[in-house]
Length: 503
Image 1 (cartoon, helix red, strand yellow):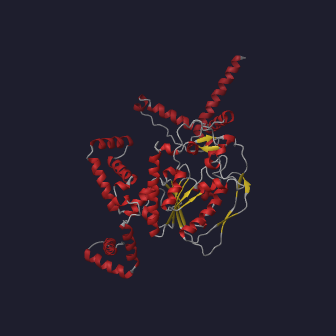
Image 2 (cartoon, one colour):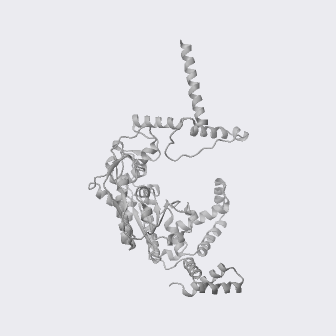
Image 3 (cartoon, one colour):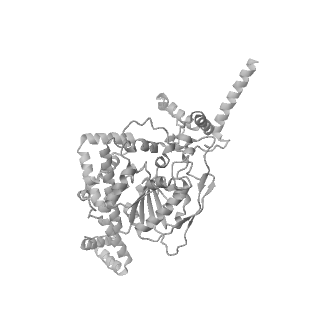
């Protein structure tokens, strides 16, 4: 009897591992993909050197962990076990609160002691950083106004502030309460005159006045229904500060429906077998008014993931002639020409917009703009030749410092990059991280008087090409000078700029 049992167990074991192997190779059973970011691991190439160094074995083990058959089922079942028996999750960045409410960990951090500690332990240092960024932002706002572009900040709410009663226990937080960006920035904006709309404060005030959830139980962003009501307020605010008549939206009566993305985004990241029990989700239909006199402006949004709710629920194409979403000032969405901010001509894009909105929630506003603000200020005030002159000066200092060069060489080697690329990247970081150290005019408290002359020269060139008489005159000069037409146009534009440069 025991032999038969052992044989059966042996056969079952072989079948199980055989099925796992077969699934890995053929995927004969369709599996729902796991949510979240997955780092693809390639099957390692065998070499004797890697085998002797055990590099091949380690890579093969990592590949097997990521690709074994029925991996999705195994992970979901294990995650469900952790959730059912221990109220725990393996999902990175997800904290389990009271009553099965979920929060992103950084919101919990910010509520109990401030995310200031990610950047510094000194409150005065973070205050100085906030003041510097707010001052730079105001300068950009005023310069863009000269070109008919309206810039403003949208302060998004945080789930921790609106629903603190469901937060997890905060006993593990032992540091003193730090400075919170969402509390500090509004006062700075008010004192400087920075345009902003504060939904963080507004949501806390509205919590007891509305009959729909402002945040979903298992999601991190504002609820879709709260987002569409916020969009209505936002567009009216944009009309006011931009002095434009733009389309408004009409929000219909609320209704219950199956969950729309991203109202359960944190739950999705947990990769469970069953859904977490929760109240029905509420939504509202959105339509755009029929105002035939309304404009359709161009919008650039620079910010975090909260704007996705607008994309999912609001017919933005009916309100804006063009809108681009610079996600954390890195990836570009909804642009026909670009996918990354590293590809764009920053000034051309900014001056081609009607509105530029920086959109950040309470936990992410510590890094307001993600490097956009200082770079935009420099590019608006100085030409490429002036910026390159400063960069060349920094590079010269690097080359004369043996320790610095040794460090840069080591960095280039470890990253598999050319030394010149690393040097230029570090030089740009130094320049844009603290532009006031390199450009005297930017140290002034007020709006700097200097402007990027390339902006005006480009405008003059467009006027030359658009004027047949002016263009014909330049064509004659191109023949006299034996240069291309574009070179002659550029020369003429520079001469005209020097004769008529703005005061």
